[in-house]
Image (cartoon, rainbow, N blue to C red; front, side, top):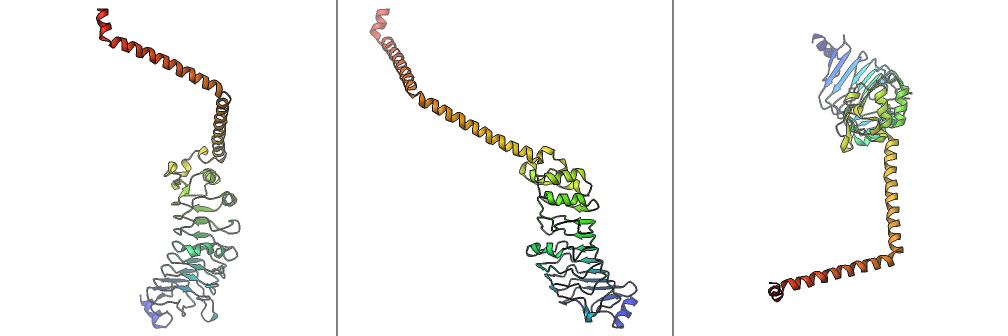
Length: 325
């Protein structure tokens, strides 16, 4: 505490912040400031800015007077950040961890993370709003993040993996928990097979367990790259809802089997249609004989009914009954 006071008294600490020079930390929580403090000490290794009103990270926001900082850890969570401009993190060449979780990003420049050659961990959990989803893939380009080891994108309603290829990154951990991913296609699965060191976390995604999931299903069964594989569940179709993806049978996701089943139903329909056509043709060609047959049946029924009627009249005549007595 005394060190904090000394730092503030020396004028070496930004206003409304707490500094511990011995640890290299500067912590600025809450407040009405809309910009990054411009007087961050050069000795800062860890900067925590939380609860501010920084809606836009402007270009060079951390490059005061053109100087570079020794910072290795930067936490910008819970600041309501909506826009990250190009080169927003210039002046932080030694930054290794960047936390932008729990913001409201609607715009991310394709060059937002340029100038961070040493970045190892990037946290963007619960921060990406739908307008920024399409921009995310460009912002996470390998040119900017070639040395990235851990990328967290939990809770962003993503419906696909926002990385075109994995072999151009140094990723060891990719966290995609609690998104909206229904299918992971064959191309992504092929890339995952090539990156045996990569671990992918996918719990709480609504997987659609149809034959489109076949490649991913066999990757889960044959690979140990998904640590939470045992927790993944199907959300569709309704018959498989709640079933663990790993517990599915091979035929449940077998495209060949599904296609053959569809073909068999089509073939059955064609056969039934042909039988119906043949039956109608037989009826048409034999319409004369069928008409005579129906007339014969009608005459036979009429004769039979007349006999029954005659017998009924005799049985009901009282005079005939007295004669019989």
